[in-house]
Each structure stands twice: as structure tokens, then as C-alpha cells.
Amino acid sequence: MNQKNDYIAVFDSGVGGISVLRQLVKQMPGERFLYYGDSANAPYGTKTVAQVRELSVAVAEKLLAQGIKALVVACNTATAAAVDLLREKYADLIVVGIEPAVKLAADQFPGGTVGVMATPLTTDSEKLHALEARWQEKCNIIPLPTPGLVELVEAGKAVSAESEALLRPMLAPYAGKLDAVVLGCTHYPFAAATIRKVLGEKTVLLDGGEGTARETRRRLMAADLLRDGEGVIEIRSSAEDPQMINRCWELLKA
Ligand code: DGL
Image 1: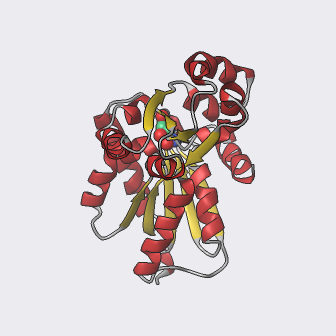
Image 2: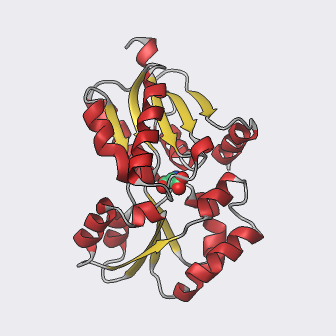
């Protein structure tokens, strides 16, 4: 494989996709990863579908110019709004999206009650409605849109008095009533401690990062594109503030 087309590109509206990158690195330590956080345009989850499609294509174009063999859309919102478009536009590229881990929750908690925390765009999306319709028989699914949490994670306040004050009114009514909560936004795993504080320490939190990494590995292996060299990670951000890149590195190590 030409070194030029050797990157696995991973993108998100901001720092959240780092929760997926860490799973990708764990499963494929010998790959070259190029992470792009579109923090200048975050949050995506309160934008229109048309805006998120436009932003996602703009990011994909930037990444393609770097020479990539796969594109991981490490953002549930961008996946819901734009993964079909990206697959159509870049038919020769491996494009992997992430979706809320509803199947995982239904398998682990048959007959249970499962909350799905996500951005408003994701909770309103056709994709999530289809997932709910598919698994509703197996468990009771409660969508929990949590606008505002992405901004706090972007600001380095995932676990803070502010995030607790934001989440308490939205989530406290469900404390002790949920068997599990699906973290349907890649920013949310970084706020896990706050979410548990509000919902109860025993709340099981599930996310799609590991499954997405597994699917990426499977697709690369099927195409004979896995690399086993020295692992490389590059992180870029659309934000002018250099602090955003530092934040990504800190979250990767968290
Ligand atoms: N990390 C994105 C997701 O998984 C957050 C979207 C946003 O920027 O609102 O949905």
C-alpha cells in the first residue's frame, strides 16, 4: 500500500470522537491515524441535517486530500445525517459510521428499560427511530436528548459542577429506573462520572466505540488493508485555539 493512502481518518464535530479513536488504537496499534475535530463548528447536534451534511462533506474532502484508506465517522450525529451521502460520494473508500449501541443494550438487558442519551439531531433522526422500532420489542427504549453537554465537553468541563447542573434536571427523573444508558454521542463517555452521579453509581453505561473499531478492523482486513507498522497518531482541529488539540491528547490518555 502506498504510504500516501495509508491513514485511517477519524472525524467528529470536536473532541468527542477521541472516545472512538482510543478504541481504534487499542484494536489496531500498528496503524497511522489522522484525527480531525471540527471544533470550530461544534456542536453539530443542534444544527439542521442539511448543515451537518455540508460540514461532513467539507471535512471528508480535507481528509481525502491527506491520502486515506478509510474514513471513520466518529460522530453519531454526522453518521445519522450524512453517512449515506458520504458512502455514495466516496464509493471506493471504506466509510464506517457509529450508531447508538441500542442493539448491545437490548442484548444485555432483554425486558429492561434503556435510556438513549444523544444530541437532538440524533434523537430526532430516522436512523434512531428505525433502531428503536427494531429493538422496542426486546426492551423499553427512552430517548434522552441532552443539548448543551457537547459544549461543556468541548470546554473541558465534562466532569464539573456545570455539567451536573445541566444534566440533573434532564436525567434525575430517571434515576434508579433505567437498567442501562446508551451514550449515543461520542462526547458523552467523557462525562460518564457526572452521568453516574445523577443516575446512580450502578447505572450501566454503554457506547458504540468498541463496536465501531471492530467493524473498521473487519472492513480493513476484508480489503487486505491492515497495516502492522509503527503506530502513528496525528490530531488536527478546525479550531484556532491550540488548546483544543491539547484537550484531545489529554482525553486520549484519560
Ligand atoms: N460527538 C457528536 C456525536 O456523536 C456530537 C455532535 C455535536 O457536535 O453535537 O453525536
